[in-house]
Length: 243
Image (cartoon, rainbow, N blue to C red):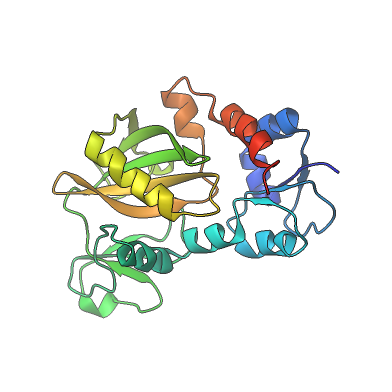
């Protein structure tokens, strides 16, 4: 049996560089989300926990796990989980304008808007108090429980700092306190193998914002000399052998 790499057709085309590196390094076969055949293990790059669940029920290991993917891709559930475990977040279920409104399952800043009226509050969306330092956030990449790199994203034209939306990115050195906070979050996240953690800045301090399950690698390759996909593949060879 071979490892299986699962992407939607559209995302596989958009991430051809990553697909080629993973399939070449691991001998993995690329499959679409409806695949339900044999696999030595599965790399699920769809953000859909049900795909991971389907294989886990058959005893097949999945990176990332179904439980991790489910939490990471429901923003409100993730905020509630972090707050319950002592991680600082910007207040959610927040109705006082201005507030940020975003889809619970959104990615890449899509569908995120700044609301100026209480009438725009929507119980089916994440409605959140804005951080003080708008247009600035931090992404930390994690592989197998270890911090790999961190990159600061800044936009001077949009409160969203996403790189794919035109934000500028620069490598960032975590302070000792910031590293402690990141490690505290990592220790809460069972079943995650390769992912990103995003933070906003409030009063100059990092505050948890979200988990990126099928995290992108473009910023890492453009802004550092780290071959993060090769590192991921080397670590996954070891991780796949563990129960």
